[in-house]
Amino acid sequence: MEASGGPIIVALDFSSLSSAMKKAEQLDPKLCKVKVGKELFTKVGPHSVTSLRKLGFDVFLDLKFHDIPNTVARACEAAADLGCWMVNLHASGGRTMMETAANAMAKLSTAPLLTAVTVLTSLNDNLLAEIGLEGGTELLTTRLAKLANSCGLDGVVCSPHEITSIRREINNSFVIVTPGVRPLGAAINDQARFATPSEAIEKGADYLVIGRPITEARDSRKALIEIHSTCIPPS
Ligand code: C5P
Image 1 (cartoon, rainbow, N blue to C red):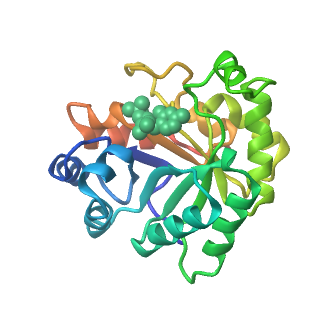
Image 2: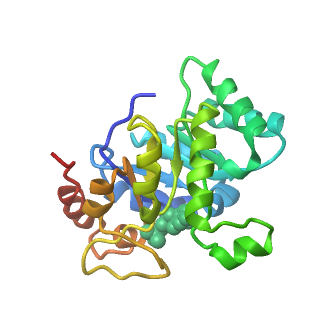
Image 3: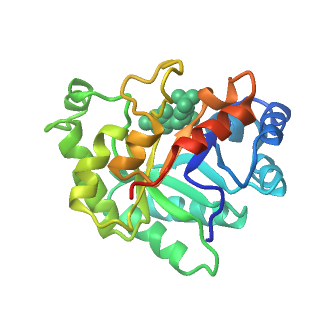
């Protein structure tokens, strides 16, 4: 699906459609895309996606599917029916789940980009070991990114700190989406591992998920324009 709006994806983490729409109206689909996550989607439903599309935004539906292959593939088809620009799943759902979803998307005339979450940035090496995943976050992230690539996915969602090792292993057409982005001087909030927009792009990110530095700014449009101006691709 043809995308517009540059590298910034604004996370519309709101609990009502009216707040999400009010914020979206302060933004500009020529300068950003938007992300609908679990809270807004669970509260409002598919209408959240269709309403934002009507304003002209490309919508990333961030529901991180993880289920049996058939269920995930049907959910991705439902996201495609809604006209989503991007949808995601958990790479840890495994090869069959990812291949079934990727094959379902390949059959569509217009399909969303299908990306995989590698390792949640809220997990550290100890928490991973506790669920039986040894080797540490970096190794696991790279392994899951390579698996997602070999299953025909379009890209991955990962922390800015993992971009370099993924880019080293996988070609440049593999899309990298990164949250944990903070402009210089912005509040860090609860992001433990973050990078500035230009650092993330220099490392090789294609898309930056940015929420509160834009949505909680006194002037969200101004904040978007300022961050957009720092997202200059490396020469
Ligand atoms: O407000 P902030 O910029 O921290 O928002 C980041 C967005 O990216 C949120 O919607 C959050 O759920 C999402 N996200 C994240 N870290 C991940 C995956 C998703 O912050 N590892």
